[in-house]
Amino acid sequence: MRNFSTPAIILNVQPLGENNRSVTLFTPEDGISYSTLYGGPKSKLRSLVSPMNAGIIYIYRDESKKSSKITDFDVKKYHLSFRESLFKIWASSLVAELLIKTHCAGSPSNAWTIVNGFLDGMELTDESESKIGLIRFLWRYLGLLGIRPNTRECVHCGESFMSERFAAETVAQKYRYYEMENGFICPSCSDFSSEGGVENQFAGCAFFLGKSSITYLEAISTLSPKDVRQIVIDEKTFLEMKQLCFYLIEQACGSRLKSLESGIGIL
Image (cartoon, rainbow, N blue to C red):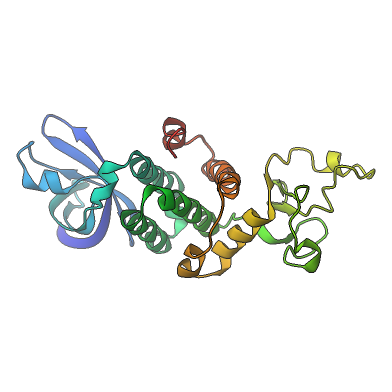
């Protein structure tokens, strides 16, 4: 038996019996854990232990009975704006589902850093900027999972996407995502008009990104969050990256994500 405290984010709260609640917690040391919150509707603690509230949680754990009980919660961040935005509600649900399904990418401490950065960023920005922030979060999380695609060079010919040959973007200049190599094929290698059968060789490449999308994703991978936030992108670039990130994150989980399916018109 022991009492201890730890930084935590409340991911989910579900009814347990008539008055109690089963609480899913995310902590930087243990990752995902579960604890019981006792008390009826009038309990002050029950109002504090709400999804996406973050702070210091106090736990009483009885190892012999394999039970865990929440005794107090010192909330530091309420993320009040989430309750006023459908997008922020669904985005935070996606974060929770992703953490649970991937077991915090096997690195709770690193996941803790990028999750807090995203949630705090959403609290400070409007819905439009939060949508771009979700793309940045997903791309960083793919990196944490160790499956972020290579956006530096063509996986077929090896030429850098930053070379002079690709300096100017044209309507026909598209970078194709090649799933077998988890990277992108340059416009030259994926030239549809070539007679070398390249189209058949790279069959199944369903995602086509423009130069702006490739450059922005590489910036997320290499620049500081502050520097990336200064980069302005257009709607077309955003949609290209969004479709790719949603696809990749579901592939990483090995199943469809309920938060993406239910919030498809919002996220």
